[in-house]
Image 1 (cartoon, rainbow, N blue to C red):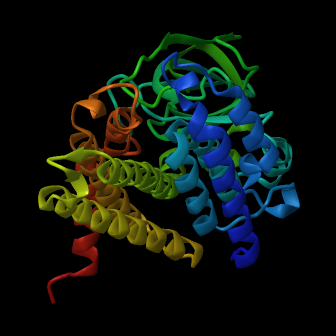
Image 2 (cartoon, rainbow, N blue to C red):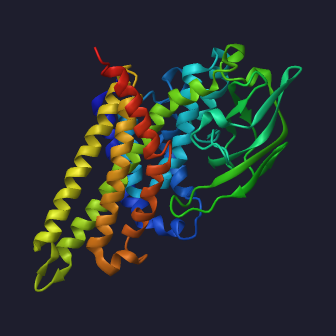
Image 3 (cartoon, helix red, strand yellow):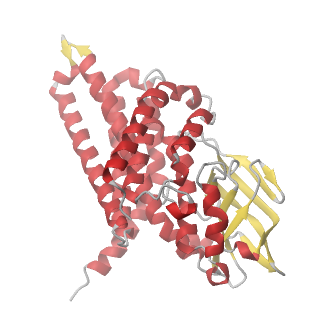
Amino acid sequence: MATDQALADQLIDTIRDWVNRDVIPHVDEFEQSDEFPQAMFDQMCEFGLFGSTIAEEYGGLGLDITTYTRIIEELSRGYMSLAGILNTHKIAATMLARFGTEEQKQRFLPRMIDGSFRAAFSLSEPDAGSDTGALRCKAQLDGDEWVINGTKMWVTNGVRASLVMLLARTPDDRITCFLVEKEPGETFEGITASKKINKLGYRGIETVEMSYVDHKVPNANVLGGDQGIGHGQQYALSALELGRINVAARAVGVAQASFEAAMAYAQQRETFGKPIFKHQAISFKLAEMATKLHAARLMTYDAAARADAGERVDMEAGMAKLFASEAAFEIATDALRIHGGNGYTTEYPVERYFRDTPLMIIGEGTSEIQKMVIARNLLDRYPVE
């Protein structure tokens, strides 16, 4: 569904102004201490961002994917962790909207629009990573309940979430998605946030290991109902197509921030009697950075537009995520080099961009996984006659 362009532009302008005024000047207050940015989260709730892509019939804004992509880009330009707070919630809402029963949609989606009932997505495990076929978390049917046992890794928003989209293996050796309801907190009736994962970047947002010991989930909470049993992997991979567009948009946002910081510094910092931008070595580097940034943005917007048109975008989303994430890391690295020694200090934001960008290369499937997805699609699109 297309979003009214004027309204979309107005929303993006509002978020951009807020990021410039209230986010960028205060990031270090949360970044260095790894503290959750509560005031920023509250404002995101006021904007209605947690219901941004949820259909209007359930109380959401009903925005298209392209507009949501632009929102993620702006948030990431200011503080990439804000996009992470939103992304796992968006994946869960997408899976519910696409594959949930009507009863599940009515029960959950209206509660997810204001940020008070947040969602997390839980796929990865200590020994599985992107290999969904290697999941060990188990679900055993006991009457009208499923009993969950296992450990999950890299759960963003796991502690604060009220709903966890959990992928587990059922006795038929297939993957099923369960809607795990819980109270926010580190422990809840058979669920424990067993370890906080400390990270190089992507700070201010919790990433945890979660353990399930005989946790019971009603059969009514199988995503898609009885028809959804065994289809969890398919549901998750479909939602991750949009998740990869999200990660590409994050990469574009951080790359934009890195480029702007480098441009400003290059025009202010002088060596040998002139701004360093006047030195060809620096101006050429900035020209390359601007070109990579522009290409990454176009690829990301193209994937979003194709998704809005109803196309399958696993290849385009993979390409956008691959290119944008690698470009963001290169741009952040060059921004740090342009800053010289100052770039290695916490007084300038480029060290944060440098620490944040590796997440986009790894998250939602590594660059190597994206290449596998792209190569597989190439065989389908260009068969030998």
